[in-house]
Image (cartoon, rainbow, N blue to C red; front, side, top):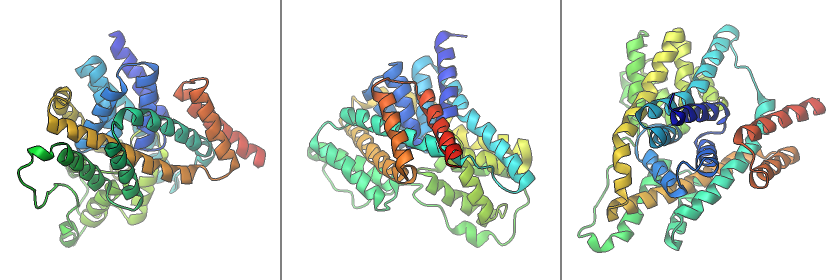
Length: 380
């Protein structure tokens, strides 16, 4: 195998195993491994690929992984990076699906996560600081980023914040070029149709074809966070098809939060619950397939975007708004992760490992998990 391909395969398999904490954490880990440790891309290139990932539908961190694989070693690396980033979470979700069907509950690993989450906070904060130094090129862009984070914390849709920040930068940067003011901007895909509820008089018989097409649709149109995914899943699988109950859907979302890697592997769990191994494989393929196709289509034009005043402003706006959203998410994660003195101490140890000793992310995550287990054993 080509050395670059082997390097891409091993790195994204490792990231798939250790990327706990959601998209913001995944982005922080990728920056540490790819920008800081391996220097495959600069912070500016990383931000532009992140901006492109935010502009297309689908799971942002998975699409960023696909972009970075493509950037490093071409078409085969595009497939390897995305597939191996997804694979650990997919296999774990299938195992949890088996346990759920066998025992009726989800196995818990709270001791591990107790120690892992604080370390993830340290990694994300370091990534925010480093990316911010590249993305925030003016006080105006700093204000956009701060406003984006504040709006997110106030409950405004992440998609609206992202698009609003990008369009505001475009408008201000290109004010002299604008000859008219748009009365309104219609963004497709901002909300799920409520028609499904009116049509769902009876449950639809299960089929792999319907499962594939439903998840393919979700993967092709979904923007936003896991909360948006929850809305789509409920509309389709609870209300329209009648294949899941609300409690089963909540358990499926919990699996996506618990496993490392992309939250979209919730689809794997649902597929396994409904159709066993074939259902899990079909659901996983369907929800992630659009991301591979979108990245392959968009990647060639990303470098050219900086040559256009309009597109360059759009990217700058998306980048700072995305960092603002990432900061808002990090505050929420920190509230959930830093709950007592031991978790704060673990976070500080993680920061020291990052900044002073420049430890590998895998060792940091493993060390945090080990400290969580040891603390509970000692306390018990």
